[in-house]
Amino acid sequence: MIKWDNYLISNTIEQGTLMEYQQKRVFHVFLILMVLCIPAYTCMISFPNKLYYYFNGALFILAALFTTAYFTKKMKLNTAFYFILISIHVEIGIEIIYCSTIDGYPYQRLLIMGNIILSVLFTMFSVCAYMSKTTVQISLISVLSYTVCVFITNGPFLINYLPIIVIIFTVKSLFGKLLHKNICCLQQENDMLKKEETMLIKSLQINREELFAFAQLISKDNPAENVNLLLGIIGEKARKTLFTALDVHLKEEKSRLEIIRKIYPELSPSELSICRLILQDKTVSQICEELHRSSGNITSQRANIRAKMGLQKGDNLKESLRERMRLHEEQYGPTT
Image (cartoon, rainbow, N blue to C red; front, side):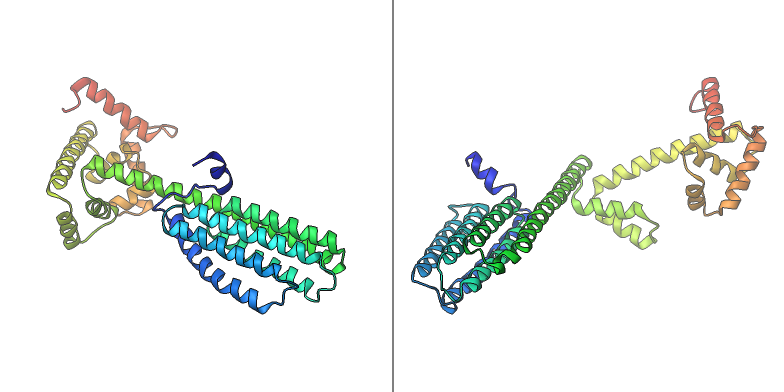
C-alpha cells in the first residue's frame, strides 16, 4: 500500500482487534442506513432538475462498487469505508453549491440544510469507526461547501447558521481524534497484557487455566475444599515445582527463626515471629494481618523487643536485627 493511503486513510487498525470488530459493525449499520436514505432522499425531495438524480445515481453506483470490492476482499475495510464517505461528501458539496446557484428554487434552503444534516449524520459514522483523519477531511469538505453556498446566496438564513455548523464539525473532528487516541492506548495496553500473559505462561510452563488457578490459590484464604480443587487444576509438574519451592522457603524461614532464637533466647515465640516478619520488610499493618493481632498488640510487643535488645529511642529496630544477624552469620556461619 502506498504512503499516501496510510496518510489519508490511517490504516492503523489491526485485524482481529476490538477496533476492527467495532469498525465492521459500524460499516454494516452505515450500509443499511445508506441503502434506505439515498433512495428515500431521491424520491421525497423535488429537485430543480434531472442533474440531481444523476448525482445521486452516480453516488449509489460508486458506493456499490466500493462495497463489492470490500466484500470480495479486493479492498480493505478502511479503504472502502473511506472512499464511500468521501464520495458522499463530495457529492453533497457539489449538490448544495449547484443548488445555491439556482435562483427561484423554492426548496433551496431546505435542500442545502437537509444535505448538511445528512453530512453530520454520516460524519458520526466515521467517528464511531475510529477514522479520525477521515472525520477531519469530510468535515472540511462540508464546512467549505456550506461556506461557498453562503457567499453565493448571500442570504441571512445561511449566514446565521454558518458559525453553528463550523462549531459542530470542529467539535466532531476533535472528538474523533480524542476517541481514536484513547482507543489506541487501550488497544496497546490490551496487547501488552496479552503479551505479558503469554510470556508468563511460557516461562512457568503452565496453561492459562492453571495460571488463574494458581493466582486464586495465593490471592486469599481458601477453605480446604477450594485448595484441593485449585491444586487439582494445577498440573502435576507445576504442583511439584510449587511444593519444592515452598519446602525450600519454609526451611529458610525456619533456619532464620532458629538463628534469631539463638541470638535472643529471651524473646517469646510471638516476639520471634514479629522479628521474622520485620526482617521481611513487613509493615505493622501487614504484620497485624498475618498474625491476626491488633495494632496495639504488635506495637506493644515491638516495644518489648526493643527493650530486650537494649535499643535506644533513635535506633532502628529492623536495621539492628539485620546487623546482629550479619554478625552472627560471620561468626558462626549462615546455617548454624
